[in-house]
Picture (cartoon, one colour):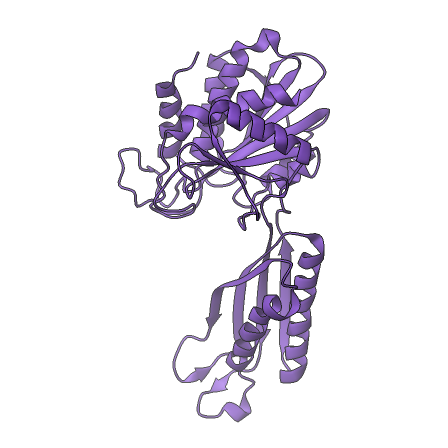
Length: 371
């Protein structure tokens, strides 16, 4: 049986050598070597990065998923295990996830003779760009799978805490980019130009009114502008302006309404200011929807493992492309406390490795209940 020191060493190695989405070649090799060294069957699917393994036998298949990619962030933890790759960091804890799923895989391997079916372990690339799970689905990894499960570490929860709810667990994630084409000129002669800065100001104010004036108080949405750019000096009116940001919603109706309202605003301002305004609106992962029956089984497994279970009242506003899998087959997804002073995607994010002590046992217990 794999001991906790080995699990921690796996995590630390993954942390030292992170790779961004679709570039996880060495990470995939490390996972493959660990699996092969422990006589775990690897199943061939058309994937450039990431891989699939199986434990057990029989017709019933339960899937267990982890993400494997890192973020383009320069680490600032100054730890002994700090990233050795410039500008890349496991700032979302996928190193924790990989080590946890590997530990669970070894425990399942030890029980292989008594498993009532097969566990298909999915080491998924490119979660951070929101398309890796869909790529796996298209590769056929969920064919004949009964249910799928996974988890994410949560640095806002203490070690030993576990959070879950049925229904929407995370938000749908969309990205928008808006390009304004006006007419530049001399700053002293604005009447000869069509200043995109003025349009930009109106656009930003109007976009921020979508949630407060178009979304019901009984629904939820987030609209955030993350980048604004226009001009490059003090005495010139520029030709163009640009903004981009994100929308987070929890149901299809609110998602559609937000997108339509944003398009209406762009069209209206284009007409009012006689300018060209182009909206690019990109749908990224859907909301993760937890199956109600599977959620209850996850709660039971968490309690059996000794976790303090929190029943979430509201979904998290983070995105998670596990939704592509749980949209395909019934799924359940949970948050497990990793107790870091700094949150996910922060250069000083530093999860507590004690999460590795219970999380694998929870997954093993849950999988036994899912057959």
